[in-house]
Image (tube, rainbow, N blue to C red; front, side, top):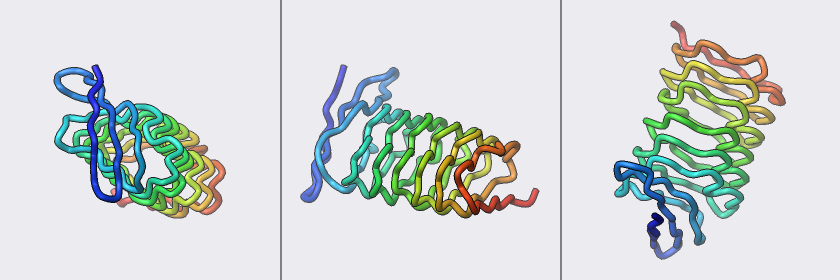
Length: 181
């Protein structure tokens, strides 16, 4: 069962298509329309952003994700080369492979509810310079930040247990800032 939800503002018109998952929770399966800002509605219990949701949306500069979202599928922001601002929800549990690949973000603050950064999550985010991981994150897997050529500063929480030797393959000058235990 699909529902259509319109977000209307003078400068944007984006329609989100929702699919009920269970217990009145929803997944956004796709969207249509134009605009540089995508504001995902907070008045629905949206828990999942489905694969390819914003793929190759060069018009997007900012995305607002409600606190209810716990999962971001694969390739959701792939190719959003002008995307500069995204705030990840505090209870986000999963970001699938290639979720943020080739997008234009310059910095990202990853909530501690994400225990593991899996391979290729941030593949080829060439504008990315700063990553902050929060308390609760334990693992950064191989190739998580592969070919993020401008990545310089990665701030790690006390909870970090393992950073793969290949996590930053293709990055030349990454500095890992460990929080004192």
